[in-house]
Length: 208
Image 1 (cartoon, rainbow, N blue to C red):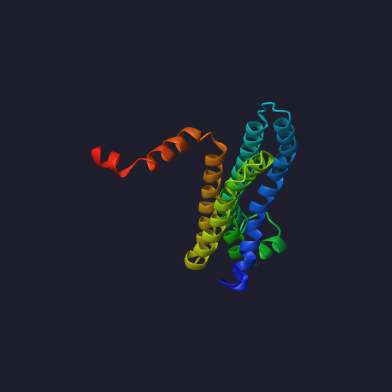
Image 2 (image 1 turned 120 degrees about the vertical axis):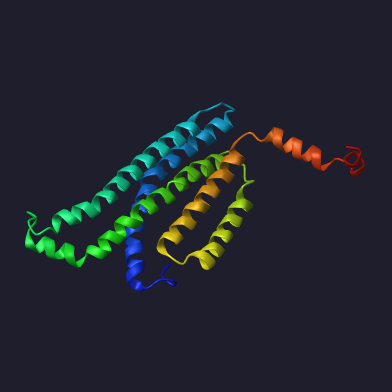
């Protein structure tokens, strides 16, 4: 971002991104608590519902933070309009500060909801990654590397605006989450079907 946009815009982006970082920081510890419990259940060959509990708690907490943050951001423009009105009870010093920072405040309030909702899939993905690593299932690792490389390429070619950068971030976070859901789910039947279809001989294909 710093290499593609002017310094004044990157400063606003950095401030708005604090909302998304805060969401991640508040929800990440749930996965850390879950990890040793899953390792213990795997070692003892016991079933556990810790994964669903962690996913539910992360989605609930993250969704709540994103909703409250979005609601607060939507209230910023009417608040500024009220505070800067001629008959506003706000003190002159505060009004002067708000007038000077109006454009920056509006830009941050515009970017903050994008930061929150585009970052929401990331802590959910972190829960799934911890679950897979605790079970010593490393199949998604090549896919994670591929997603990271594609994300960098997409930013280079299509990250021409602040909102565009956040949309790319959100799209790849959702992609990451879907890939991890696929590896977490029981796909044994689908894999057997695909393997059987690939092993069919050309003669059988022609007869069909």
